[in-house]
Image 1 (spheres, helix red, strand yellow):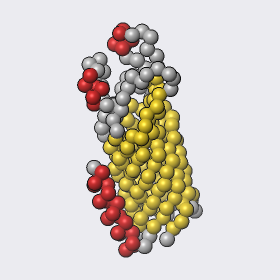
Image 2 (cartoon, rainbow, N blue to C red; image 1 turned 45 degrees about the vertical axis):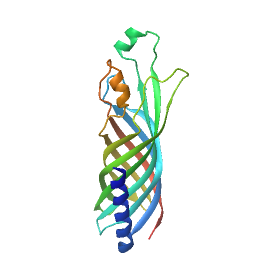
Image 3 (cartoon, helix red, strand yellow; image 1 turned 135 degrees about the vertical axis):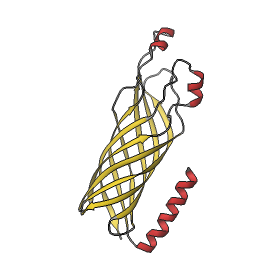
Image 4 (cartoon, rainbow, N blue to C red; image 1 turned 120 degrees about the vertical axis):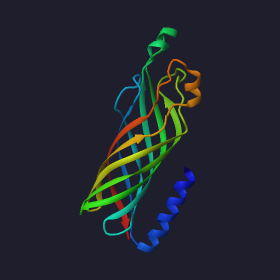
Length: 202
């Protein structure tokens, strides 16, 4: 997967030199994450920030590779089986910090409105848990996702919204195999809302 991303980025860079259409900007925004697991609260808020490029492929089409530092916040409650084994367990809040690399195809519907779609691969940089107790959960080192959304350009500034669908289980496979009480699938669903501005265009 990583090799595929590198090949795609190299092809985009070569095409950008031929097209001579390139823009670079910065962005920041809010995440609202849910996990399809009954023990995790819905729509926990966190943040993201990063850099976004745009490489023109014609009058309406472009490619938008991005590099984003993004956080997934999970608020987990002990399951019934876990409470039966240890009634002292308490709810836990996890902060999963990722380096996300989406590569999105863009289509300009009209002058200022752009729709986006494409793959994203996220590398887990670290995981932190609130409180002093030892963490009960462990997470995979990477996540592959599909992204869809839209962007509104406004004279150098832009606002955007997108939906990110996680395609693989973010919880550690080793932990799931050793925990017969919870064999559920932990796939994320995330709304992202944010704004940014272009640093330069040429």
